[in-house]
Image (cartoon, rainbow, N blue to C red; front, side):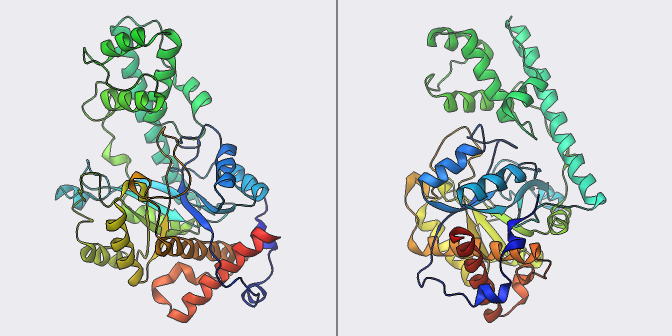
Length: 408
């Protein structure tokens, strides 16, 4: 499938174009699709919502897989929404794990979520890196299969009339990856199909939870699925399976894979939770800056819906002053169907400053994708090694690429 970016004018022509003085578009740089797990059951509704909310740049960001890229690309072109091609991994820093330091997983020391931004499309990995990704995916699917088996054992123990089937779950609710959230969804749907009243459903869930009454609103499917997941499938639950540490790649290996696929390594910042807690790794922004810089990471992303607006603003301003590429998104990696418009906790709107920084970051990735598609070297790949004039040119090129795409 040809990349439309190859057909755009050459970069000097784009750079010489007259752009609107106050060019700014709404961006969502991190959205999961059904190819991993998503609030959306299909990819098309994502673009329908994006169009309704006037979002002009949208970044696919599935776990481990680029399988959704072709469909995402077609719908992006059809709906005039500029696509960013991203990916996400779960890595393990064993040194930080030994020290008990939590990175961007608040419950598992050393566990590190890590993204790649602006991968090539079509994506191409060499054999060695492709095998690494395949191994991680297979290990993840094996863990899910065992969790389904344990869930079925629990169902048999309470004399349930139904069982879960991995192949059926994958066929019906997933695409590339089956995750624990798919198990929770399939289980909730099976229970609700078997029992038609809230009283019957509550009684069955009470059995499933070893006598603990469910607290979730039975009319709220998302809440019920989250409760099933927390009671059965997370640490401490009877169907929980600890992931094999040998199945995790190191952060350095993940970075290699991302760069081999043409992308820019990006650290996803968790920042503050609803109680104001910040992980050990992220609590000191100066130390975080030093750690990321030492690993040659100069791109970060945040999911502002998790964060206090004031804390987010100060954090983003600090890293923006350090010259980092910064992206913002919504993730949509839970059953909850929230707006695609990026906002802070309690739907507090982004400041104009954050909107501009988000748009600037997306334009840098757009320029990177354009240059890679054209077979040229992307200075964005060495963002921390170029001067301010070169950075301004890349930002302008990205804006021109997006503007051309949206208007031609």
